[in-house]
Structures are given as C-alpha cells and as structure tokens.
Amino acid sequence: MWLRSWIIFSVIISAALIVLFVGFLANASLPFFADYGLSPIIGSEWYPYEDLYGFLPALLGSAWAILIALAIALPCGLATAIVSVELLPQRYQSAVNLCIDILAGIPSVVYGLLGIALLLPWLESNLDLLSGHSLLAAGLLLSVMILPTITRLSQDALHDIDISYREAANNLGLNWSQQLISVLLPQAWPSIRSASLLATGRGLGETIAVMLVVGSIDRIPEPWYNLLAPAQTITSRIGREMGEASVGSSQWSALMACGLVLTLAVTLLSLIAHTPHKRMAHG
Amino acid sequence: MANRVNKIVLCLLALPALLVPLLCLSYLLMRGLPGLDSSFFGLSTLEQNRDGASLSNQHGIVPQIVGSVLLSALACSIAMPLALGLSLFHQLYAGRHSRSFMAHILTTFQSIPPLVYGLCGLVVFVHLLKWGISLAAGAIVLAMIVLPVLTLNTIHALERIPLALTESARSLGMSAGQIIWHVWRPKAWRSLLTGLFLALARTLSETAPILFTATVFSGVIWPDSLLSPVTSLQTHIFYLAQEAVDERILAHAWSSALILVTLVIMFSVIAHFLNRHSAKQ
Image 1 (cartoon, each protein chain N blue to C red):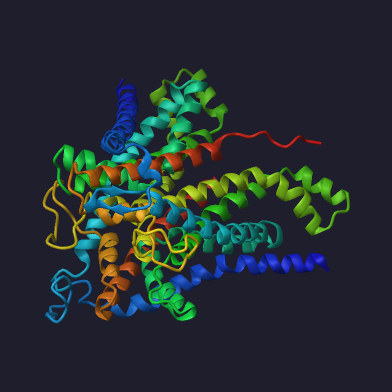
Image 2: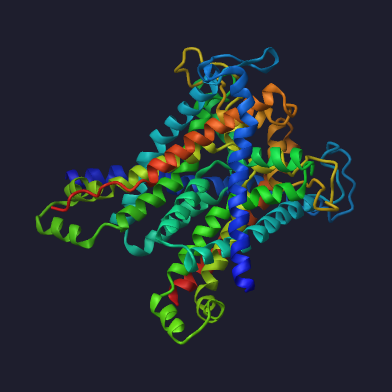
C-alpha cells in the first residue's frame, strides 16, 4: 500500500513541478509581450532605463558564439570519436574516455576562471585588442565545453554500427578511408546530427563561463560580423541583470521573456534531435 | 598514401580533446596548490587582516565547502525518492503510450538550461512563497535540474534487469513490493548509486541557478535554518573571478576552484567504479 501511495505521490509532485515551471515562466514573461508586443525580438536597442528592450544584440551574440563553438567542436569531436573507436586499440580507448570525462567534469565557473586567466590575455596579445572580452573568447570557451557531448554521442554512434556493414565493406575491398567515408559516416550520420543539435542546446544555455568572458555590452557589433568586440548573449544578459531588476518591473518581465525565448529555442532543438528519423534503406 | 594522410589529419584534429583537459588540470594544480595552506582552511590562528575584508574570515574556505555540499546533498535527497517513484511508475503502471510520453517529457526537461530553472525558482520560491534567498530554494531548484537525468538513469537501470527474472518472480506469486525488494534491489543498487553520485557531481558544478536563489557572497558563515542564505564554492569562485585584478584574490579563487574540481572528480570516480563493478556482475 505504501508503495503505491509513494509512486502516486512522486508522479503528482513531478507533474506539479512541470506545470509550475511552465506556468510561472509564461506568467512572468507574458506582461512583457502584452505591453510591448513581439517587436522587441528584432529591436536592436536594449536600455532598461529608457524602456527599450531589443533582443537582437543578445540573439545575434548567442548565435555567433554557438556557431564559433560548433565550427571548432564538431570537427574535433568527430575526429576524436573516429580516432578512439576506429584507430586506437581497445586499451587506449579508456585513456581517451578519461580525458573526455575530465573535460565534461570541470564546472563551468572553473572554465570561466581559466578563460579569464589564459584565454583573454592570449587574445589580447595575439590579436592586439584593448580587452580580450569578445564573442570569439566566448565561442572558444564554449567549443571546449560542448566537445565532450559531441565526442561521446559520436562514439556511441560508431559503436552502434552493425558489424555486418564493416564486414561487407571489408569484403568489397574498400580501404580504410573509403570505408569511413562511404560506409561508417553515413550510417552514423543521424546520431551525429542529433549530437550536434543537443550540443547546440547545451551551448546556448551555458551561462557562467560565457558571462565571465563575453564582456556584457549590449550593442550589435560594428560591423555585425565583428567577433572581437565585447558583446552580450541571452544567458549573460539574464545573469548580469537578474540580480538588479526589481520584482514585477518591466525589466524583470523582459528578462523573463528572454528566458522564455531561450527555453523555446532549446526545446525545439531537443525535439528535432530526438525525433526518430527514417534509417537509411538497407541495401 | 591517402589513407595515411587522412589518419594523420584525424589524429591532429583529435589532439585538442586530449591536450586541453591535461592543460586545464595542470594549470589548475599549478595555480591552486600554492594557496592551499592552513590559513586557507581557517586552521591556523595567524591573523590575516591584510586580506580584503571579504577574505579575512576565521573559518577560511570551510563555510563555502559546507554550503556547496549541503546544497548538493539536499537537492539529491529531494530528487532521488522522486526519481525512484517515477521510474517504478514507469516500470509497473505505465502503458506503452505513457512510457514514450514520459521519456519525451524527461528528455525535453533535461535539455532546458539550468539558468531557466533558476529563474523559475526565483519567481516561485524566493518571491512568491517569500522564502527569500535560501538554502531550501536553491536545493529545490537543483533537485528540479537533476530529476530528469536521475529518473532516466533509474529507468535504464531497471530496464537492464532480465525480464525472465521478473516474470518467474511473478509466477511464484510475489507481490510488486516483494519483487522490488528481493529481485530488483540486489540487481540494480549499484547502477542507482552510480546515478546518485553523478547527480551529486552535477549539482556541485552548477553555478547559474543558485546565483540568485540560494547564495550570497558574504555576511553568512553557517546557515542556521533551511530559509537562511548560504555561501557556496561555485558562486564564491564566480564573485572572485569578477574581481580579477588583485593577485591575492585570484590566488584564493584558484585554490577554491581546485577544491571544487577535486570534489566533482571524486564523486565521478566513485560513480565510475560502481558502474564498472555493476558491468562485471
């Protein structure tokens, strides 16, 4: 009897938490959309003291940061997975896994600290910048943080390929590169696609490390592809301003609206990533 | 020939994943180790007034460590029973449709950024329920963050138990409670503990969600109730990193970071060993 009541209790509590979460996030950000409409999403000015709430600088910042991160982490993560699964003998694989585990285990605030101590001075001296705080720094830091996700999921994808494909490729006399490019990668591709979508979601939601190196200046970079200027991402804006916004003010609900936009984007990515897609025709 | 070139290119691309963690760890040790003296832990009675006011605290870093561990432990002790209940519901009562619905909900909530959970906790617990910035608010927010991961992990652990065992237990006339205790528990406890330790490591490394809901920089040494704010290692490092000009403050931040990483890695290693033993069984 106690077993059943405990199970029912935990189901009810968890359902309540989900409803609470969605309800209050919507409830806290709706006043903003009611007052300002949807136009702030493409507005380019964010000055809370003048009631200007444009999301565009932060949206652009988040997009740039994650693009830089993916451009680095995707090739590196995929290569690490291929090397560890296809090239290295079994006993070295655990060493690679240990490195990946360490990378995943370092807390984001420590990455932030490393970014401040190593990355920013390095960027300043090499690129001759006034301050290293930039989208480039945020993107580089994010690339390290999403690397474990991409590597692990790609490793799983390669492990999951049916042995018969490898045997068939061998029997056809394909060499190593041909096997990789025309058999293994196409088979693993759906999982690799999901991996990069999940990593994108993770990177978009990363807060503390990005906040410490991005500079938190609410402007669209001049010109818009300038990655070396201080900028802002959605998460760093929420993190910077949430502490000072007074409860119920328009700035408060604007920040909640930022949170809602972020949640919607990440949820969409996760839905696409987890949608089962047609396996390639076996033939 | 082309084969060899391809392999070399791949190895070069894979190098960062192997070098960066080693570089990070060795740099962390290099900067953090010198600061780990007895005054850092508040053990020596040497007065250190030349430190900034925020650092001269006779307890050293101990209150921050206690705060972090307390938050993690509370969060996991809230989330673990719920995760067990949910996964038992998944195994015992849920039909095929509600199973896949549960899996979808759990993976979706797993991907929502921790910062957003923090926002939600700020609205509900800190302001609506008027708990203020408190240990309880932070613990519940962290519990919400690990609940999906913990539940998915528990479900996987239960699913790995061979169906034949459960069915023969059922045909012997055992009740659900007896099956759980006598058949499932001995098979699954290692995997459950693995999940628990991973969840502890995860809650220890989250900073953003507790920044507004649970922690303050100074003014508190020991929390005296669930509704009192705490200090934590993660947010301590964050505040110090923002003041990254003074070399002494930075040294303090590095030592704190070393302690934090040691704690996280310790929990992950315990989880890893439990998992290895469960794989051998």
